[in-house]
Length: 283
Image (cartoon, rainbow, N blue to C red; front, top):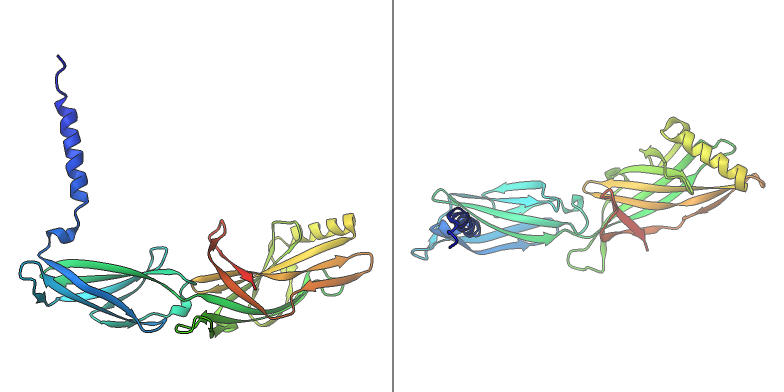
C-alpha cells in the first residue's frame, strides 16, 4: 500500500492558496470603492476627471482625503502628476504620435488608497519637410551645404481630416546622415541652422565614406551619395529619406536626384525599427 505524500499535498495546497490570494485585488479588502470614474477630454491638451468614493457598507458617498492623477507614457515612464485638481493639462505636441497614455487615479479614503485607470491615444503627428543638399561642392568630396526647413503638424482634434501647425525648425533637433549607396556606415552632421555649410572630414567615419566613394568611382566611374534626416521632437523621432546624388567621374559633373518639392512625412503607426526608432514615410 502506497503511503500518501503529505509534503507534496501540502505544497500543492499552499500554491493554490497563494494563487487565490494573488487574484484578489486590494479593493476587495476595502470598505470603500470608486464609482462613476470618468476621464473627459476637452481637446488634445486639456482634461478633467470625475469620480465618487462610496462606502460599501452604507452605499453612501464619502469624502476623499486627497487624490492625484498620474499620467504614464507608453513605455511606462511617468510624465506628470496632478494633485487634488479635477482639471489638468498636458503638452500633447511633445508626446509621441498616437502614443498610448495611461491615466491612473489614486484616491485616499480613511487611510486607504483606491485606484482606477484608463487609457487614451495622443494625437497623430507629422512633419512637413523642405530640403536641398549639395555635396560634394566642386572637387572637394568633403565640402557641402544644406538647406532644410520643417513644420511640425498634428491632426485637428475635432476635424480629423485637417492638420494644425504646432511647431517649426526651432522646436526640433536636426541631424543629417550621409552615406554612399552601399556602405552601412554614415557620416553624422548636426544641423543647427536652416542653411548650413559643413566639412565631412571633421566627422566620424568620413575616411570610410571617402574610401568607398573613391572605390565606386574607380570601379564604376559613378558613385551614389544618399542622405537622410533625423528630427528629434521630444518623444517623437522621425528618420526621413532626403534624396540621393550620383557623382559621374567621366563627365566630371554631379547629376542630382533629390526631392525639391515639399514633402509631407507621416509617422507610420506602430512601426519601429530594430533600434526602436519610429520611421516616417512620404506621401
